[in-house]
Length: 120
Image (cartoon, rainbow, N blue to C red; front, side):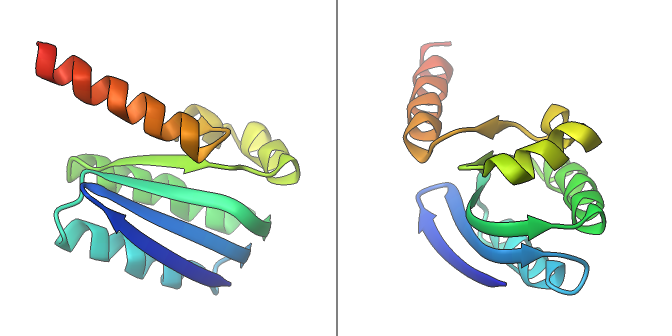
């Protein structure tokens, strides 16, 4: 598992490459902890380079989604490959963590949400 992060304003963009399992999840957990410490408001997990994910890692993601939510940090998954989408559907993780097909769409939605918050 390789992880590359980019900090973009209040967004922490984490690109995952390889297999996410119980042995590699601590790498992702460390990145999420960094986002909490750095006062980010959103973590975007880019799964484009993911080749696999285990059910244990899905359970960790579910747990961490709740931890991040308590800290006021939104989590979003982008670029989810079809073979992993199947697992998300089967475990209903896609009902817990929002999934968008592209980073461009995520930026578009983010900008619209920012504009809506300013208008209210």
